[in-house]
Amino acid sequence: MEVWTRLRAKSGSTAKDVSELAALLAAALIAGLFERLIPFDFAVPGVKLGLSNAVVLMSLYLLGAGRAFMLAVLKCFAIALVSGDWAAFMYSISGSMMSFFAMLMTKRALGGENGASPIGVSAVGAVFHNIGQLLMAAFILGSLNVMAYLPVLAISGIITGILVGFIVKFALPAVKKARRSARG
Image 1 (cartoon, one colour):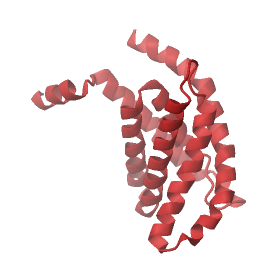
Image 2 (spheres, helix red, strand yellow; image 1 turned 180 degrees about the vertical axis):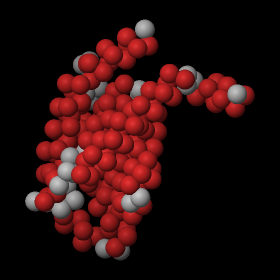
Image 3 (cartoon, rainbow, N blue to C red; image 1 turned 120 degrees about the vertical axis):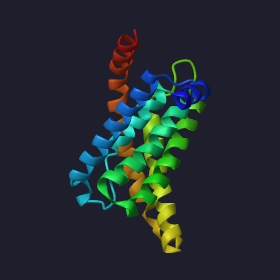
């Protein structure tokens, strides 16, 4: 109990905060595993919808940068742990980190009066997710030749990023309302 009290004092987290993060992690895990079942990359190998990234993006708007970052990292570990695909973990973590920081910077840079739209933030994040994965592939293979695949992945990233951004944009008000009433 003393450990929990000290951690809570340091982080400012409450049991509600921890349970909220756990629920978002569960949602991201379910979305990520569900996405693995969809044969979406038949036309362009490596293309994914990024459904679990919708949860990370939503948490960036709901919980702030620190907790959203924690969710992004935990999501990569959880999906690798449950799926047993540790080879894909390196690609996932590199893409997720590039994506997270690109989304954070875009959101902050375009914050303005009305805030940055999740649609644009998501599109930027999707492209940087692909860049992160390609850089990891270049590192593993010892060749930058894989970067030739970037234009294809960037176009697909923009399209899927916009789709995920629309999902977040329209779900965000309802989630904020439910969150307020739950904390009420």
